Length: 182
Image 1 (tube, rainbow, N blue to C red):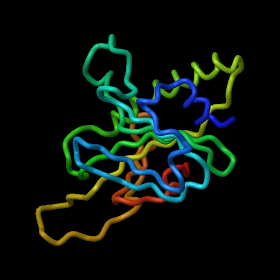
Image 2 (cartoon, rainbow, N blue to C red):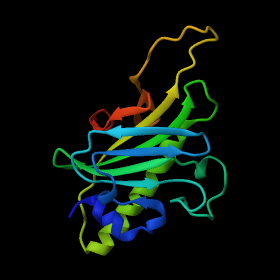
Image 3 (spheres, rainbow, N blue to C red):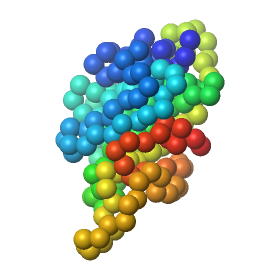
């Protein structure tokens, strides 16, 4: 049994899009920012978990507000090349937009640890830990005020933020293989 199917068994249907619904691609949509990204190249099922906000997976409500409650937009749990992977995804309209997506990704990590602990208890054994990736996807890049923009699509760069490596992409359609490669 895959990690994604274990997680589907323990989470409420309101926060997940089950793996059987995803096919060969998934669409990540953030309604507040009116942003949509298609992830293509899925060979195996992918469990998509909506994170943050009302009716979505969140931190404990009794954590003090502020940075402690920041969270990314999606968690993808899938099997790729025979290994379980967890991909935290934050969607942003533009690279120049305000906010700290790196902090949102970092603060999402405890939720995965919690889900894995619940799966351990449900299964009565320690399940294997997935490879974890952190990704920020921008709809566009605002380099300066000039009207001429270079065509930057795909991977922009990789940065280190505190204890995590974050891959940054621009575009509305990305390959899954780019997101999961460590």
